[in-house]
Amino acid sequence: MSDRERTVVLAFGRALGDLLRHRNAVEAARRGAISVSKLDRNSRPSRAVQESVINATKDFFLSYYAAVSAMVSLVKRFPSVFDNPPHTKNEKFLEWMVGIALFPDRWDTLRLARDFRTLLDHPAGKQPDEWVTGPDQDGILRAGLYGPAGMTGNIPAGAERISPHAQWPDGTAWIFVAPDEDEVLTLLAVQLNSIVDRIQAERFNPESIPCGWEPPRGQDDPQDGYPTFATRDGVVAQTGPMTPELSPADRKRIDAILAPYIEAMRAHPK
Image (cartoon, rainbow, N blue to C red; front, side):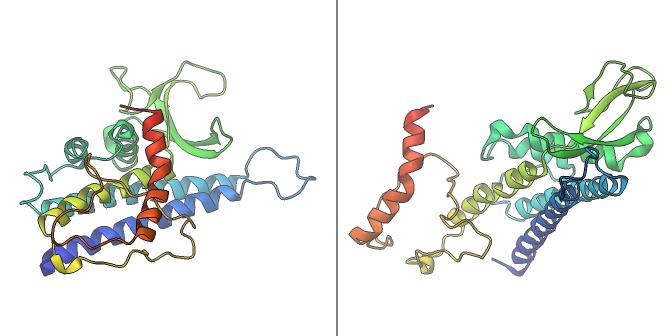
């Protein structure tokens, strides 16, 4: 890579690191709502806990926008790999990205995250709203926004229209619960497999083969490692003069790693 390319790759890494830290901050704020004593009969989180969850949620989705912008910069820096992706608006980039994305059937999660961030960062273009916290269907404390409809009856993109109810102030027409932060982070980060694999195929360096089999594993990484996602369908095979020889032991290890995923594919064929 050139110095400019290396800089934009590192910038995207830092943006994902920031998003990870903000996700952790949301989870830490939620833990404040967990009862630590059987004598605690209060089922509602304190105001301090609610404010902590709201602030952490707000920071996460503002950081999400920065991470998507960093991804745009990364893809734009490799024009020979990616054919003229839109780069002036994150919304258009995300719609382009779904064409090469992993798990495109879950893409609505990233669209909702974009809509939620837009609602946070553009208060002048909409009716006033308020924050609310509450448990979701799994009992996880989440933050959201609610407010009245616009002059023409419209509601913000991504919001859910609600019927008038005594628990809501008069005029409330919609609510927008923040998308699951962990799913947003994971879905965005896993796209590195789609982006970097395409860059590697374009910039293949023969000196990278053979490489060490064991990947570095941090203290918080899963003991069984992470699954590897391919950018397109294919077959794992030994071919070509640059492919390293694999011992029978290595082949058994590879087969053992792939076995659960092969069984899952057989159980749920396309």
